[in-house]
Length: 249
Ligand code: CAA
Ligand code: NAP
Image (cartoon, rainbow, N blue to C red; front, side, top):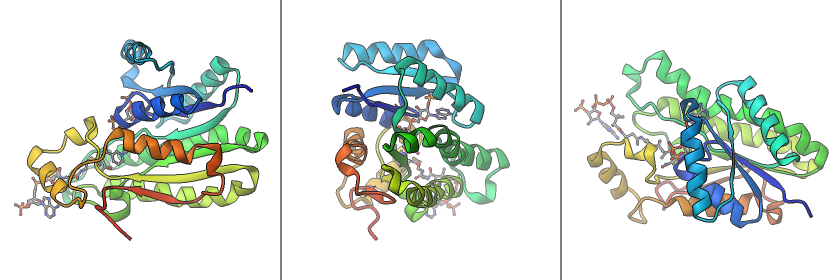
């Protein structure tokens, strides 16, 4: 049987790297989407490090904010793998935290475009192949802060909440075509994104997490592995919270 292909956007980032590794372990041919401000050398260095650790992962450049760039990325993945994409993990994201009273238009637009428009830009490129193939797994990486809202994150909370609306609508459209669409809402995980938060604020956040710590990238990746497995065909339109109890509903 030919290996199914999985594409992870933001695949060379903190959580993305763990997702890529976990999907390799699950038997997929994995492609990490990267941007790196166009620094292809950095992405190749990431790939070499993965190889040293025993993970064979392809890389493909794309700017998730740009529909045309996403089309080129998908064409590149299909050419490299000679296959359609069966698993898409929409994981790329950014933050531009500030109180709304001080938020400028670029902070708003950049976050909405990178976290929400991106999901249209990538998913639109693969959905028809998945429908034709009668199989697909789409996982959208949202956030606990899309579920509960967060001080300083009107832009990010709006984008991440929007993701789950997208998930629920698309899940209904493709449910009978063998394609599942789910949201995963991680809590705080110490990656470069969270490292930007001032240490005293990080400490306060941890105090509010019942489990008493941040999550690990591997804990998030394990949940992605489950939602992308062939066995998860009856889970669609769900929003899986993985946040150490920080937000329960
Ligand atoms: N609730 C109420 N008030 C708060 C507050 C909170 N949670 N946090 C800060 N404040 C208040 C302070 O007490 C202070 O009040 P005073 O002015 O009355 O003293 C004021 O807000 C701070 O004002 P600043 O001008 O310093 O704040 P700012 O507009 O520059 O923004 C901030 C501060 C950058 C938002 C900072 O509070 C912060 O980093 N908060 C954490 C945001 C966060 O959790 N981001 C997550 C990033 S990682 C991620 O997003 C991944 C994921 O999905 C989990
Ligand atoms: P990260 O290490 O900063 O990774 C973010 C990734 O997004 C990077 O690989 C980055 O790619 C990519 N990206 C950003 N802009 C892009 C663009 N325009 N085009 C293509 N790729 C772009 O942060 P992370 O914590 O792993 O975050 C991964 C996802 O998890 C994000 O969606 C984030 O919102 C979500 N999340 C994180 C946490 C957490 O606590 N860490 C919690 C909940 C949800 P390049 O580096 O190649 O530019």
